Length: 270
Image 1 (cartoon, rainbow, N blue to C red):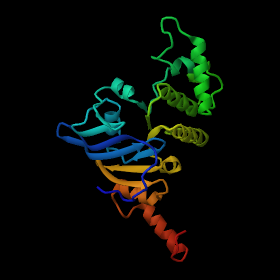
Image 2: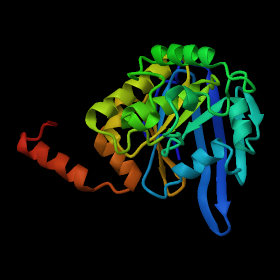
Image 3: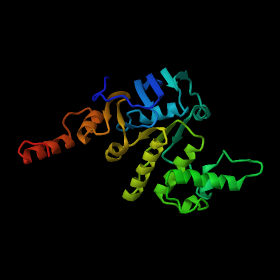
Image 4: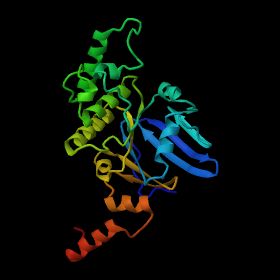
């Protein structure tokens, strides 16, 4: 389906290109002819209702599933992402909603879990220095890198998970519902962090149900509906436009509220 709202092409290098990606599970078609581009230094939001195919697409890029048909290009060449390790080697990191943190370990141990420096004789000092440097670059509000993760807030835990994904210097980072179940202050902290990750030149794929969060940080918004592309919008897209693309219904509660507002103001957009 052609984009609903054409945008000027981003200026950053094209990192990731998906063309004709489809995925079937037996007789069930989860994705059909999906197209997606991600450039360096941009946030691409992936939105859609439950069952739209967002999780399946993320798992394909993370190497958990393989597409039935279609091509994945990374860094200008066609690649096969047949396992999670291959995704990391290419430069695609994923922060899933459950974060996969060990609450009994401190921040340093979580950041380097599985990638310890000098694993036979841990270089604790160097790991702590690198942890502080990375968190300072992200302007993260972590009281101490020796603080157990169990004592951190939801926003701080999300920060640790994102910082861990940056240790291997990936080119593309996928964030699955990073602000889910967070308070207002913690959500603002995570959104600020996403902007700082973009400023470092990474491509960010943001999966979220929160339209306000999406509009706050996304450069482009890609809508999926029933496993297909349903439109591409700029970050300035209205809530009504996004809801219409997600649901496929021109008339809904959001559009009716807008119409009531126009009538109340004498026919002018409030």
